[in-house]
Amino acid sequence: MIRTMAFTTQHEILIDLPLEQLNDEKIVWYWVDLQEPSDMEKNVLSEFFHFHPLAIEDCFHFLQRPKLDYYEGYHFFVFHSLHKNTLETREVDVFLSKKYIVTYHDEILPEMDLAWNRVLQQKSSWKDGTIYAFYVMLDKLVDEYFPIVYQLEDELNDVDNKDKGKRLELLINQIFDIRGRLLKLRRTVFPMRDLLYRLLNSTHIEMSADQRSHFKDIYDHLLKLAEMIEANRELTSDIRDNYLSINANRTNSTMMVLTVITTIFMPLTFIAGIYGMNFEYMPELSWKYGYFAVLGFMAILGLSMYFWFRHKGWFDR
Image 1 (cartoon, rainbow, N blue to C red):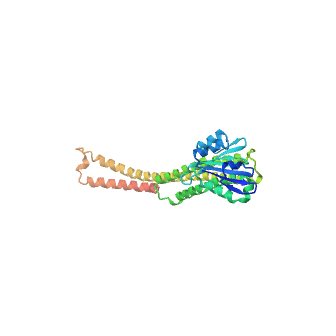
Image 2: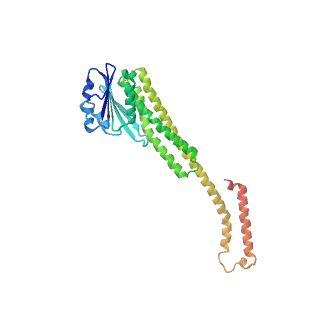
Image 3: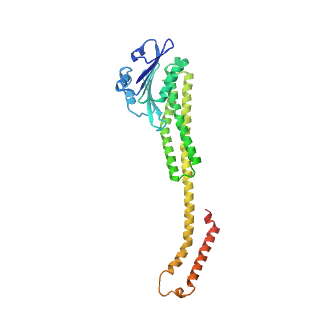
């Protein structure tokens, strides 16, 4: 589907004009949005706008890294949108000039609809031209990153505060799942941050100081997102290390107790082994009180070792 909006010399916005009328003299600037375009609609990029073949190829081959290319008369951008549930990356391609902004995306994106409607409603900013529509679109894309990061933060807090009784294996799996999603976010947010830095420092894109401050605000948002992602990734490492340390300490305590018990029974087993060898000539076997004497000796030996280990604090670990 192709939708259009055009700003006229009479300070009006015209919706869904045919492409042929967009070059009318009364049109100051226009926005053409291609969402889920058909094969015929895709040809608009080459047959109507005559964009560079390499830029068009980038539109059709997903997924490109967020980037900025300069062409004669326009600039080409690749941005990324994120699906809230799956964190799958969706590409948004933008062609920007003073006369027009052309956006291309293979899926219907809520962020683009929000930006489209906001541009229609903000009549006071129509005079700013395509750079304003470009700012609104980019701002909406970045704003949609925040709920995803906040949700992951909440999940991490739940793991750290409420899941103490869970099995270690389940906790580790949950932490690695969150860490994997943070890595997906990192692969999107960091390149977007670098792209905004390049945009702000570009001499090819003309914008006023006020417009540049708006893009600086988006860049600040991306910096904040990058810091939050890194902080949460470090938190996942800390939580994982803490739980592994607790589990190792519990294992060591258990092994210590089992080792002490085994040590106590070692001499008792040795004594029982001697008298279980069934030799014919063993003097103690003929003694009337031999059985009770050996049991008593074994009990005294075992209790003595128990109290000695307890005195050493080996049962307190």
